[in-house]
Image (cartoon, rainbow, N blue to C red):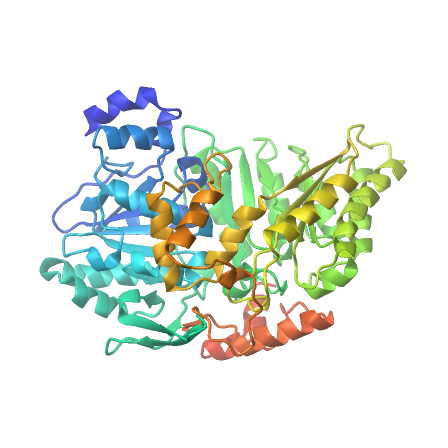
Length: 618
């Protein structure tokens, strides 16, 4: 295969996507006892290689002597066409082994619109797309990641779905497989795997529906498998595996830097945010662990930037001490420290000023909504005064490039709330012109970006209707018409893509046939403007007799059984319902880092007290 590949690579856009052999990539000897695991990402190399989860699991699995983990990404269309034309199956980067020859193939589900890429990759690999069609010789297909918290739209394609964080579960699965490998029986292994906490085996469960299309019941149909799937989470991040090096690509990737994970979870309680609910509880790494991890990554990768990565980075207890350490130790080497979007307060600006002495970039804030009423609905916990004060301080210190992220289509939103986004953009611009500081940047650019709100499973907004394409388009046009300054750059998302994302975010098993039909019509890379074909998707829904509006356009009753209700992720449905009612009333829920708001997690895990563990690093 290698010789055939070498002839094709000069003919494609970016050959380095398919060659492997990068710095720190892993080569291992293979014998009969080796468990072969292919870590897949359903997007191109540049996107997949930026994902922290893949970096962690790739290194962790290869740390075991009995496992060889390799990588595979979705080939871009030019490479795929050549592979199909020359009958070259999808292959791993490390050894160019056909994916169909692995024991396991794992896919991370980061985005609903990547689902057709998974089907396309399985087809290109020569692996049966539906789990029911696979036999003893087929690899076991595993899904995981945030979208796996509603696995039902893709359940028929999965042998197993990991619910929660993967490090401990994957280790336990490898241990289990090692005991089955020499006398392997697919059904026997899957039944044993289903008894591991956090492992969902879809073929052992059956859904029944009411006449109106809603879910009637969801039951286990195999003895000795759990009725409820309880998620897994790592309790002690100081003692869990974290790589001391990352694979360093030969080409620029989306996030071309080292990533330092500070903590997991978030207790801000934003009601639109799925990650803030499913990744609870908050668990911080100690300062000493982070210093050690940072030193190792800077030494082994050669990157000139290390990004501090977490859901709400500015909330890390020891952030001042950590940034001081990194700046002092690596100032001479000109190693930059990167932050994601900033919390809207003075501390964030001061921290950004400190760490951007090496390389000054723009600042990103996420007000999320244009009016205080809307920010209270979503429990954002910041005011317009907070934002204006923060950007004023930033302008005083010499910043001229500010990004503001908003959502449109939030529950109870009116055109007055949408107008608030435009007005807030202009207020930020006005604050720049009021700046008298000697450090004032002569170039000003305010970027206003809106995404379309998509209700997600396991959030207080899982019951709400989603704005229609027409409603979102009207709001986007309003903002285009009302932000015409050359100093304000407005960007937005395609509402048709967001509509389909909403269908699969809260979908059920009936959608599997739509996904398969769309894939057969050529749908892939659906998050890309270049390849997204809305008309083909509509054809697939029509041919399968499914109305996509059923999943997006209707308000759910509070007592409706959801396709994901068989998953216990720690935060109770009762708490989410209570938060939904508080949203409708515009009432806030406090930041629960040190004060419990009774979301249910303290009862989820015996002996666990969230506020005690979050304070343990202080």
